[in-house]
Image (cartoon, rainbow, N blue to C red; front, side, top):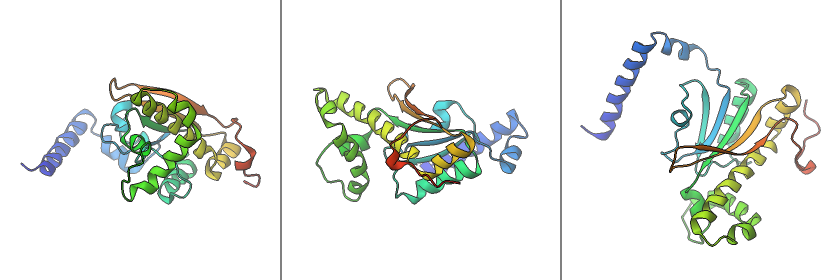
Amino acid sequence: MKPFEKLLLENKAWAKERVLDDPEFFHRLENIQTPEFLWIGCSDSRVPANELTGTNPGEIFVHRNIANLVVSTDLNLLSVLEYSVVYLKVKHIIVCGHYGCSGVKAAMTTHSHGIINKWLRNIKDVYRLHRDEIDADSDPEHRTNRLVELNVREQVFNLAKTSIVQKAWKQDQRPELHGWVYGLNDGILKPIFHMGPDSQIDPLYTFDNLV
């Protein structure tokens, strides 16, 4: 059996098991989508949002990219953000990184990785802002993991800088923004940062004409 055929077979087994446990499961999913959470995570195959949070399909709206970045020019991310905030009316947005992230490791080097250099530049900017703190640690693993945390924090700030989030904060007092880091070695999610509708950001990034 070819690897992709195994995936199709496992899918059939999973669907059958779902129906046996709950005959109406797929009927509910087919007609409505009301997740409370938007998950912005890393594309790493070891960090599946539903599995590590114990949630079912329909409970988390998911966007993933290399190193869980929130980039102001990324129309894919911004489209997901607007749809989830404006139309799905999510109450929480989680930016989830993970320790040992290869994207973060790569951004800390001067090696060229081809087209991904342009994406990693966003992480290099975070590194530059916190270089003194990070480089003060002599342990390479500690340095990488600290940048993982700082990168998550910065991406939460980037969410708060968007007019999409600021408008929802002003009108609906939502969503809460969360920065988490997942441990590949223990499977635990570690909350490291939080921002809510009353959080203050630099006035330079605040929009005053949101209605």
